[in-house]
Amino acid sequence: MSVASRIATGTGVALALLLIILAWDVALVDQLAEVNQSLSDVNFRASTNALDQARLLNQIDEFTRKHEVTRDPAYDTRLVELRLEYAGRLAALRALDLSTGVRSQVDLLAREWEQYWALLTSYRAVLAVPEAIDSDPRALELAALDRLHQQLDRVTNAAQMQVLEQAL
Image 1 (tube, helix red, strand yellow):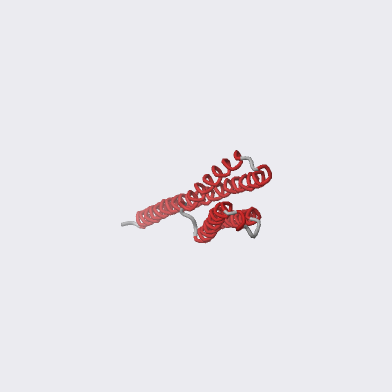
Image 2 (tube, one colour):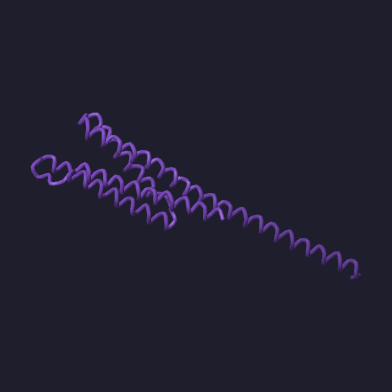
């Protein structure tokens, strides 16, 4: 074999190896982009869900205050609907495949919601016996709503931080 054919063969082998490495790198980058996109989608859904929940909490707070002032049964009916919608949104948020940091904040939010729901249940029981009321139940309910707002802000911040970390 002549020197020229050896050089041509070596160059061809080197070029073939470079093309194989390039194809492997492109496939790896494509795979990483897909994984990043799916993780971003989950955290984006978590963020939008949390924003929807914030809107619902604001409405629950508003209707709670209006019901307290007017005692209009229409507000009470709407409150029940809003609370059920919020519970559904929370269940949808918990069903997402979230990162550990966001998951822990969502679990804390679920605990706050369960405490709020227990407060509402006890509030209804106290209303059946008005002389048993020793504190303002609506004030307790509004305080629980404030805690829910604060925890929901923590969930939103955790999801946004996760998206930013993935972007870097």
